Length: 325
Image 1 (cartoon, rainbow, N blue to C red):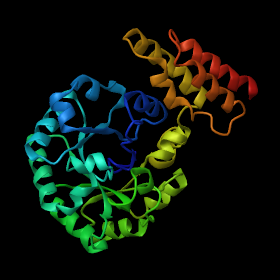
Image 2: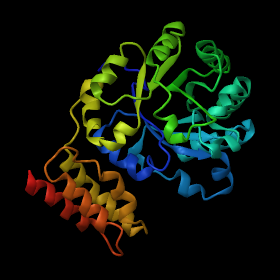
Image 3: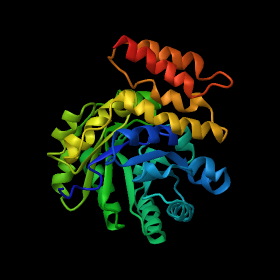
């Protein structure tokens, strides 16, 4: 098997979406994808319910924890905790544009302070033996375009960072909501491609506006890896193509097979006090474009939240799809 770059295909950290139940579902489709957690702030780990934020199933590996913060020592402590919990990588968020993130002095606003970010990442690297990576935008606000991006990357490279996950949009911190920042600033994939040409020694992973495996293959002619977020969440079945198309492995399972494999997991989680709708909400996109998909979604949406709802609700929804097919 060819020796592919470790970040050849990744799923993105998605707030309120890429929780452990979502990642378990994604892993059933692809054994090779690197999965990323939702962003977790240093404060939540150091002073909150640590298990709630960090717990994961061993099958999710390789799994990266994305941290939000700007205090080097706090980030280093959290990186050590992540390593102790068994995460295979720690990633620093320098791309989230929300007001809440800015007020905490982390996320995309950190791109204006490349030396602080380098201090954070360098301190994290010194604290752990697992890889430390960074995810960022191509720029923010009126920051000088390509020159600003390369200055940011050079500073982190000097701190020993070798993997850069680049969202190919600027972030506008004033005037646009987080949702608008995912859609309104124009995509500039060519800038990320240029970054790889100018820094061939670095692993450059491209993110933003990539919707199909075919597009992934096109980008992989220019960069080391691709990261999919909303496309993977809204149409998780595309992940079934990842191992065969990008790694030369076997095709992933069918949506119906994935539903069947989710049933023991659901039973286990419910036995430990979980709620079905916390899991099934990530399954709504499984049958996009398939006869019966609407009935599948409706049945889960209308019944999974009810008291006592169990795996049988998912089985009933699956039967609606298979009968229609």
